[in-house]
Amino acid sequence: MHNQNKISRRIFAFGIVSAGICDAATPLINLNKKHSSLIDLSSRGQIFRNDDNGPFLEKNSLYFDPEPELIKYDVIENNFTHRIKYRPQRDFELTLTNANTGEKLIKAVRADTINQGINHTDLDYFLRDWRENKIIRMNKQVVDIFLQISEKALGDNNALSVQITSGYRTNKTNSYLRKLSRNVAKNSLHIKGQAIDFTIDNIAHAKLKNIAKEHAVGGLGVYDNFIHIDSGPFRRWRS
Image (cartoon, rainbow, N blue to C red; front, side, top):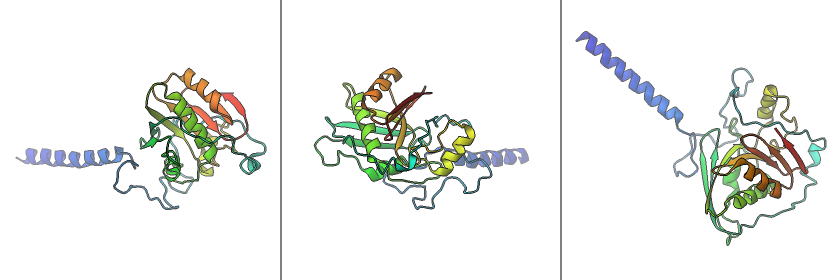
């Protein structure tokens, strides 16, 4: 009887721990659900600590990209002229997945509406620096480039799934990534909300690269498992 009681207590304790693990594995937010987010949306809401001691990022992260330095970094945004304005040619469903957190954003893009079905506030939050939970107003030019590439990649389909690997980065995140690789640009356009890294499901990487070449009027970096686009000056590079 004594042994049975000990075994019962162990099973109970294991069940409590397992429940905690399952909860921890659940994505922190899901923009498609109506209940409130588990993340603090205030300007002070953070996932990681402010101190630089301890693990700020996982060392084995694949989702940061070498990027050419920009000499006239501070004047790019001020002197930038909006060269394209995205106007969808057809209706389609766009599913965005954050490859780092697993959260999703689903949008119905519509050709006959004023804002094309894109809520930029939602998009800004989705493309936030997920490590620090900080938001910036994303540059509309890079968003337009991204949507043009996405629509072109549809082919005969009416829905598209996109994996976002990087959007906005705070200075702190970018500085940490530079510690992992000095090829990460000190003046990355991710810091200004002018860059997006992504890949599109069920499309050959070579085909995506060719579509991006056609529509990326700013910077385009091609990597083994994603592409980088930005609204800076015209440049091309490979990993």
